[in-house]
Image (cartoon, rainbow, N blue to C red; front, side):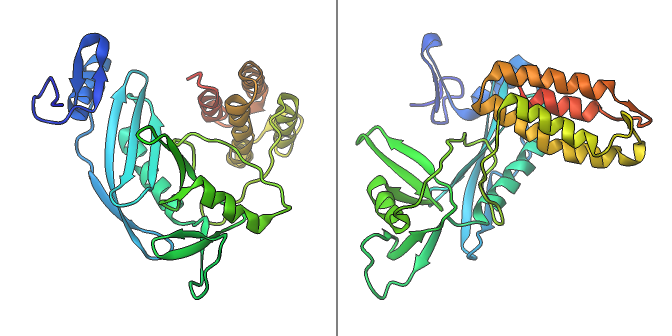
Length: 290
């Protein structure tokens, strides 16, 4: 179906109530005008990046503007890799593109599958592309569903892997425990030299960690400008815990903790000209209050 506005491009966005069928460009034109933001035109629509095994991957870069958010997406042309970054329409879109590029580099810098010798057939190995693979003990994948044939598969290292094959590969870890966490595509990806670890998102413990971290830098509740930068960097990790509480725990508790954090930061006596403004902004962003 052609776009009802430009009559040229294929429509990918369908607004049934209004009878509109728009291509991505026309949708972004309309949204940019409606939201009074600038539509970014000057960026590379395609990029090519080598993965950790020196294999080249080519991506199509696209942007979709909607009320409240702007999504930047990288889709691999001949593979299954997909990466997304979500920002607000009024945010700096060049920064979003840089973030997307960095996310691709991180994702391509680590492999969940380990290639094993093809000299002998391994019954519980993942067979794809003429190679066979085992699973590493730490990894990530994307869940993909096809409504055409009502099937579910996983995308691992850009390769389609059936649920059955994945289950067989897990038998290599028979007797071990499997921990998992479902994350949005716009969240940060697992990369090289990264590991998963259990993190408490109990609201009392998050606040306890926050106070303990502050205590490293305060002297009688005073923060010297000489230590302000180091203090901010240390608090970043506590804000990460707050964001996890907001995403995966009780949101009301997270918002309450956020308010307590901001109140505590504002109560600190300091001779720094900038502390704690940046931290206050990050806290609001962590609980979607900005």
